[in-house]
Length: 337
Image 1 (cartoon, rainbow, N blue to C red):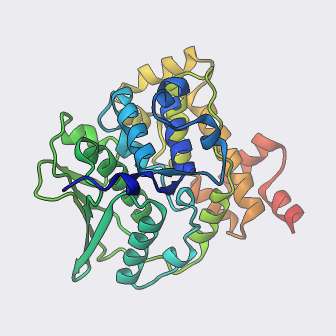
Image 2: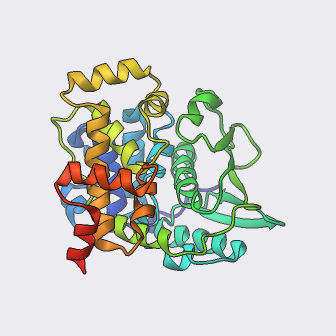
Image 3: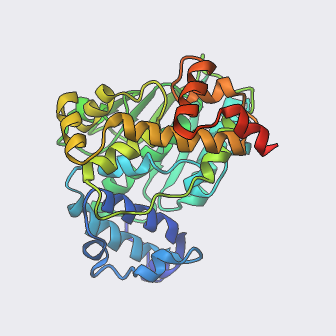
């Protein structure tokens, strides 16, 4: 596809908040901000301005500079997984409240088109199986794989609300095997050198939620402040915290996190101890923050909050929360009322 006109490339089209999140993602991997922004035309002032927008030219220059800094070819997909509905500036009530799967997936596609207009998407369906195909409308050239991975990561993260399995096809090669990609998304079948870049989602047997708990959790999470980068933190500690925050429930174990990082559980425990912390401490700190957020900002039953945070029953959740804060969940809920 031919490259878009120079005039079109200069038009501001995307919120600078995406660039800000991207830079923070790279900083979490140990890359210095100055190294990321140098010679890209993107300034620190733009990143800090909530109303700023970037042109396609600025976006491509930033991605070009960052691609070789990332090192891991899976990193763009990992960044895309951080782009859930709140990250796109959308709380998702209309999306997640839809009981019609066809309408629900169509709204997800439309929201992505509005929030991240760097690639187009073609939606099709056969029965209860949906397919989203990515289309390069800008002539991205060598940057197309990087941006495609970001989109696929975001689609997987958002659609996981309504789909339990994905087939993700990329129309370019990968040096990493499927088992390495599955460390980022165990619910996905990855294929490379496919005819098209597309994701297939079978929705049969996985209906949309009929209750409002998921929506209330989403609303509360949208008000959770973005963590500020801390240059003094160990890179592995930052990665572990991000993984726990994305899934603080029962699947969040030392073994699972170590597997996603590609190291042994023993090595992970030793590394965290050397950094002055532990997996248990990190997980409990995050669960305490989320628990207080959910208790204060939602009306979700205590049992559901405990389950979401990985507790087997309400009594276990109450005991842990009292040990963390000196208060019971009921105390916080009554104070809120």
